[in-house]
Image (cartoon, rainbow, N blue to C red; front, side, top):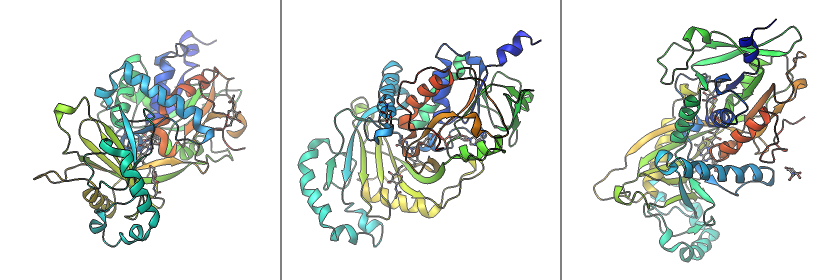
Length: 436
Ligand SMILES: Cc1cc2nc3c(=O)[nH]c(=O)nc-3n(C[C@H](O)[C@H](O)[C@H](O)COP(=O)(O)OP(=O)(O)OC[C@H]3O[C@@H](n4cnc5c(N)ncnc54)[C@H](O)[C@@H]3O)c2cc1C
Ligand SMILES: *[C@@H]1O[C@H](CO)[C@@H](O)[C@H](O)[C@H]1NC(C)=O
Ligand SMILES: *[C@@H]1O[C@H](CO)[C@@H](O)[C@H](O)[C@H]1NC(C)=O
């Protein structure tokens, strides 16, 4: 005979990974009215949250830059970002702002800054052709902070691109979850699943990882309880590039491999000296995509509040570390990015370039370019493990958003909450299942 409190625990949800996807899932699930917020546990293995792609990303949002299979999710997410920002003062709280997408076909001045890489575009006729065509189209809408004024072309429609500071957005999501009663545990990791006499999933064994550190957001649970079993019937994997490892750890008998790999990316955050507090409310943001003239394709975003974010220097050879917080930037990559930034950003008299943050993080990528947003069929869990029917239980996956995880997070969180509760989904995610 089970007691009432045991019964209540049966429907608990464990979400593995407190990046933007895990938090968006917890956010919508805790607000659906169908799941007790206190029964939602978010677990992250890192000793410091947001030292991952979700904290270090650019924060560029687009409404319709997606392949047909992701278009529904992308459009919904763009709208949810807008709605959240309108309802909760997103401009002030997480730097939400409409943006103008601009392409740059030649990085004029960076040629001398990054030695020997200027020839290619000079010899390239198409860049020239693009340059003449574009000058007219941009006019006064060009970024004031950009040194180069030629070769610019607007590539976005009115109100179809926007920007946020993903770190501040994640912090906001987390605060709303905790406020509702969602429980956060970190650093901790799931080491195995437990099952009942019928071989049905009924819990996750959690161990503390790393040394005990002061938790900024301490969960309303005693620390020692973390090393034990969290009873749950719903398990959600939102561990970004670590998702395949998490799955194989928890389901060692499964022959299924989660087809997600990692793509490392360096980024640089620098002060925008062209920004002034007086025009903070009217400041226009730009997202600049340059062609590969400097050994990589720079992406430069101006954010509200006077920050410029540079990324685009990726690597497939930097291995995914054990912990997201273990990552160390590669000095040569940072040097290259600083040169690029110096070549592209117009200096302001007497002010040196001021680097606010250097970072390296890992995008979770799939070969198809589509994220995986689905329930994992019981048959793929291995060992004859079963889970409760849709709505009551199940093992779920939301990862592999590649370069678009910030943009697609709200809709992913919403459809995950719907999937977990066994309701119809608000976006068409039929192409986002595990390959059979
Ligand atoms: C340089 C760069 C720029 C980008 N720019 C943009 C952009 O402008 N717009 C956009 O839309 N997207 C952008 N992205 C992509 C975006 O950052 C990612 O798609 C997104 O952050 C993925 O979120 P996630 O929550 O799936 O994974 P992550 O952010 O990686 O979070 C995963 C979490 O899981 C935790 N974890 C790992 N192992 C375990 C475990 N065993 N147990 C529990 N937890 C675990 C990690 O500690 C981490 O907190 C960019 C990415 C990079 C690298
Ligand atoms: C959902 O998307 C799939 C492919 O991604 C498509 O075949 C299907 O027609 C779509 N369904 C609806 C209802 O639009
Ligand atoms: C690096 O990744 C970004 C996405 O964040 C992408 O737009 C860019 O094309 C990539 N560059 C290279 C050289 O792979």
